[in-house]
Structure formats: structure tokens, C-alpha cells
Amino acid sequence: MNGKKLGDDDAVARPLVKPLAKLPVEETFAFADHLAAKLHALDTQAHARHMGEFSFKGPDEFPEDAEFEAILSVAETAFEQKTGDDDRHVPRPDDETFSNKAGWSAGGSA
Image (tube, rainbow, N blue to C red; front, side):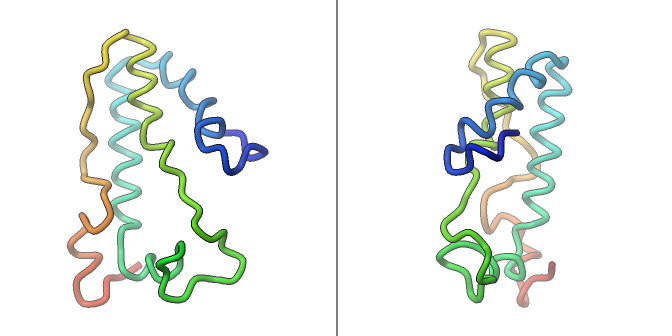
């Protein structure tokens, strides 16, 4: 990943696509599932207190409004490059915000 291109999410994520495209399809999808599991685990009220413009009390040095949405599509892009097919793999567990019900109940835990 290229940290020098911070702010250009696609440029930062692009170096991940090539090695993922060299993997067997099952491993590319496993990467997507593993990433989704990590994001699902971070999807808690306790973590939300420290991120972005909607944070409850974010640290002063945390980059405001920073997101890295591009990383969510690296496995899909690698699959398309490898196969020429644009079928989507739906990672499990769900990595959308608020999908970790346990992380948002009773204050959630980190």
C-alpha cells in the first residue's frame, strides 16, 4: 500500500490488486471475508466514539473525515482482472456500519 498517496484512496489500494489477482479465486474471496470479519469486529459503538466527523470524542490527531472505502473493492477488482468476470462475491460477515448488533447494544465494547 502506498501511504504517500494518502487522500487518493484508489492509488493507495491499487498495489493490493495485483498480488490478489495472482491468487486462486478462493483465496481472493477469503481475503475479502477476512477483511469483512475485521471490519465487523471494529463496528462497535466504542470504536465509533473515536472516528470521523460524527465521532463522539475523537482524538485530536485522528485525521478528520478520513475513510478508506477503496480497500473494500480490492478483492472484487482482483477477481475481475483475473477472470474477466464481474460477478460479485458478498463477503461474510456483513461489514456495513451497524451490522455488528452486539457492538451497538448496551454501549458496545471494543
